[in-house]
Amino acid sequence: MASRLLSPLLYLLLIGIGVVMIGPFLWMIVTSLSSPADLYHYPPQLPESWHPENYSEVFSRFPFGTFSFNSLKIALLASLGTVASASLAGYAFARMNFRGKNLLYWIILATMMVPFQVTMIPVFFVIKTLGLINTHAALILPAWFGFGMGAFGVFLLRQFFATVPREIEEAAIIDGAGRFRIFWQVMLPLARPALATLAVLAFMANWNDLLGPVIYLSSTEKMTLTVGLAALQGGELTARIDLVMAGVVVSIIPILLLFVAAQKFFVKGIGAGGVKG
Image (cartoon, rainbow, N blue to C red; front, side, top):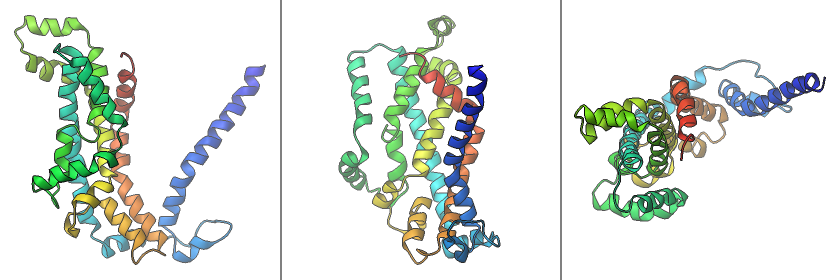
């Protein structure tokens, strides 16, 4: 009897939480299709007319196409670097024995506790010394050497590789496979869920990064979408919230598409990463 009463209450609670969570997202879409006059009604209400032309106006006022291409290029290449470096390190920590392995692993994990603002200045001087200021390489290359989400990626993939049975690796060794061939042809295909999870998280982090482009980039044609959105909010369109929200909706479309496409692997990867320490 008690369970029959609790079930409807549980559903109502979950529906309420869902409405609260999706409310800001719906408000953003409605605002992006409203006129400026409809934004200041109190209490809030649906607009009297819809204005899809807000989206084309955003693209006509700002080089959003260029910004989107730059963000996509940086996010894809930096995510690829994160996955490549983290998978190699994660495999080494999970399946190979070498002196100081545990100490080095815990040092890498400890770097996750260090905020980016602490390492920002030394990394900037390294990038400047390499002559990469105002280039996209300044935002891509660090990911290939473990900066950004590299430490988390090492942790996630090390956990996954540790769950692979030793017998699979031993069978490959008996067949004459070397260490790198085992990694490339045996381990990586098995680790697809964890790799997809890391790729999605790394893409989101690089796509939404604002501080990095502001520090390293100076020319407009090399700026990213996040910088463009910040310019929208603080520039001549400060009062045009409808256009700002149209720009925000455009910026989250790639993230939504990627998450929907990789949702199956994402759930498997998160679950597999916490199976074994």
